[in-house]
Length: 229
Image (cartoon, rainbow, N blue to C red; front, side, top):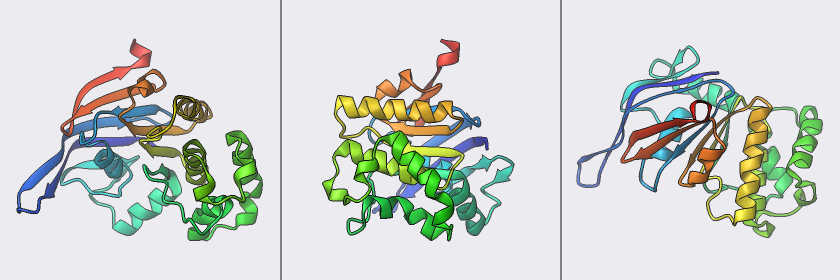
């Protein structure tokens, strides 16, 4: 599924009843099986942009297309259904349920979508092995390191076989070794055909992604492509 943003603006109402513009005039094409990053400092609009791309937020003006589906014309029910089936999301904060084991947290999206867990058993085991986290399955979230939590969050995002993996600040608070491991995980997933969309302040992602949009103050300042470099 391709994604297109056409002249997207996003405004928020402040506590003193003023409008604050978080995104301005954003035009983006994310092609199927591409690897794209949005890089910029805190407050540049990256997280808002990811929420627009995944349909969590609606733009104030402009439109978002998921394939041929216009989000401005789609119902909230349809948007939620497409998001559950097409997207896997790695949140900036892991959002684990601390009383549940790693395995239970990973499989929770299957419960939410009423998917027969038995049908996913082999796929689940393969994900654990590829991420080298088989030994973590019976641990609880508070027993994991930062790097281990990121890996578990990625597996949870992949459990429903999404077409598009979206990650917000996936290397935040990681040491160099763990960050590089995350870089390699995303690169390998992209080589397997998964569309990857990253929002990050970590400029090193530019060396791994096919396309990078550099952001500040809610705008795209620059676009770079590895294929054209």
